[in-house]
Image (cartoon, rainbow, N blue to C red; front, side, top):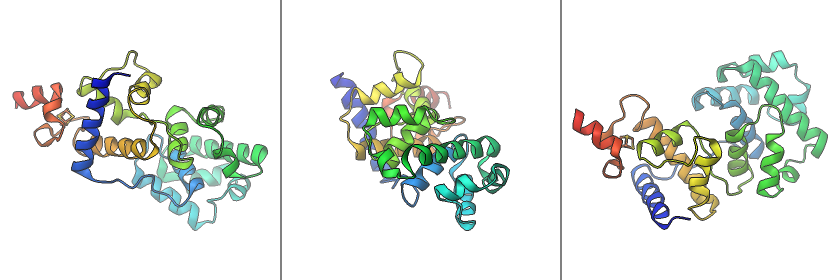
Length: 227
Ligand code: SF4
């Protein structure tokens, strides 16, 4: 652990929290809905995922038995708004198949595993990668793991907080090795980074002059100077 990095990460968190307030993540009615939302949100905006979840609910499909029974093409059509809907229908099917085969649909038994084993098992299911697995571990199982996504990578890069290697695990280690493993902190921190990345530290034309992290940020200082 680096004490200076720990302080820096907590300073960033405090500023983001003061700026945006609590984010109340993850939106979803129960762990199963959180998991399906985590699968559907890959490369999709939350608004479009929300529409797909509403469609699933309207057709009484947001539960494991119904999702196993429904035809895959029909499922793809129901979740159409979430883009890559054919691939995502296959991924949703793979998850509910796993849940039925190994846990008789007892989601609590799956989510009750320890963090490492749960994460490894999720990664073994077709279509679940690092970010989706960690979304599920943190927001459905409420276990302490830090979720890394494109917003997090971008913000850290602009703040010159660089991992040892350009890999998911290395970015994750920045948080896991320097912050206490606190579910509430990890929940809120990831949500705040996403809010900041979508509203202020945008990919194109970040609004650095209004950013609460400006005095910590070499990229922001350059951007403001060049205006
Ligand atoms: S100052 Fe600009 S580049 Fe730096 S974190 Fe803020 S918005 Fe992003």
